[in-house]
Image 1 (cartoon, rainbow over the protein chains, first blue to last red):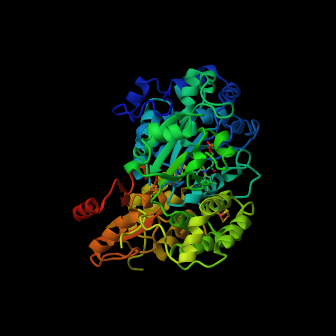
Image 2 (cartoon, rainbow over the protein chains, first blue to last red):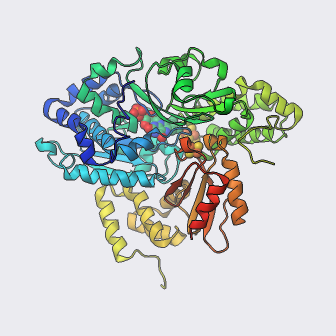
Image 3 (cartoon, rainbow over the protein chains, first blue to last red):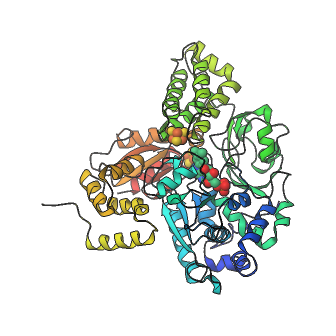
Length: 429
Length: 159
Ligand SMILES: Cc1cc2nc3c(=O)[nH]c(=O)nc-3n(C[C@H](O)[C@H](O)[C@H](O)COP(=O)(O)O)c2cc1C
Ligand code: SF4
Ligand code: FES
């Protein structure tokens, strides 16, 4: 498999501009500034088939194309480096090991929409990553890739590193923009979309770190080479963060369309200690869980995960072996969402807490007849009834856990105790 | 007024630089609050009022922001803020045992500070380090692949 995103990370001092340039870095930016108009650049990215890696999979070139060319307002690009979807840790790796690829990609995106101010919004907890990026930004500015008249062109671009302060919802693009405007990270109703009404009401493109870091390679090697990798609707390579009960956890770069079972078995070494696989969450904690037997025939692309009733999401693969208590796992995720709901919409604010409470009591042996149907009904009432997709992200996994492991939930309620005593996810008695 | 909350000259200069970086002043809210938190230790009501005046926004807006984000504190915290990740991938790797070990060692519960002000213990959500779980963050630093023994050794080194 070709390494596009991880091509630099094992090289010593990959975070420095010297090493980055010695490996072809910033040639993509030079090429777009010298040889391409913004329109040609957008067409090239459309032709590559690149889709957003932040979770929604929206075609990147098309998103850029929505930005009005003739708007008298300033335009902004924001690199979304808020990475907080449980099970996802790929952006952090790129930020820490290949910050210049993230910067170069952000500058290429800015040129595509003729923006003169770009931001990298990095989650507050990434203190080290912010230091690495700050130094890389200084290096890039000193080398003339940033600032006025970049590389002798008449193009000016400023890049501002902005630290969040701890809130999952600031990863959602409109929540991020509210946060960047200096307020609470409250999402906004869409439409209007950020492409026309984003930061301070101005046209804005928000792209994920991995999306942006893919751009330099695509420009340098050509869209057709990128589009030759993958499946019909999922082009190129994708980073998967693999965690949980797996022999070799870590970040893997995979050609889209690769067989999922083979990936887990051969690349990640399978489930440790000869234990049996029980379930996998394939795309970060917001996505529906799959039972072990459902993995057959799934390939790692947008279409295949969707056909299996889940989503590729952020590519955060969480593996659970037979010792895992699925009630406790569901409760853990429900607790995450209850903690992170921004509280603007009542179905999400109330529903998330309600689901968390019920999962908790089932796990602790206080579950009642009808509790599971109650969760399913609360989940159904959140779906589609909220300002931002967080509501769905909380509702989907809750319902999926119950539907797929119903017998285990029923047993907890019937026997009034946690029936998976071997679970690793608990304090030993 | 004695001991009025006020930036040092150096912080005031830094404040000017930060605000100058942004297309609009209000966008500088989080970096200015970080600056205030660094200088004052935590964001008291007086500090919030002071920041509101500096930023030309209503106090309620600053208060709303401070209470929204987990990294902005309205109360003093220990010198070392231990934040154990409790989300699923870390839980699968035994995060609950790490928290239990820390509680036993320090004699505090989650959300509490040791009597000597050395440690505050918190549980937090996923810190994007799930491949090296279980893990914790202490102030700015990540500690990964923890076990009950290593966590004790790490805490011993934090004076
Ligand atoms: C609740 C929620 C959390 C999100 N968190 C992130 C995140 O941490 N990082 C990210 O890049 N996108 C996140 N997204 C997706 C963004 O809203 C947005 O779609 C993405 O940044 C667009 O970039 P892309 O097109 O390059 O994927 C989140 C979405 C939702 C609904
Ligand atoms: S769905 Fe939840 S997170 Fe999104 S805006 Fe509504 S309350 Fe906030
Ligand atoms: S779950 Fe702990 S770092 Fe992700």
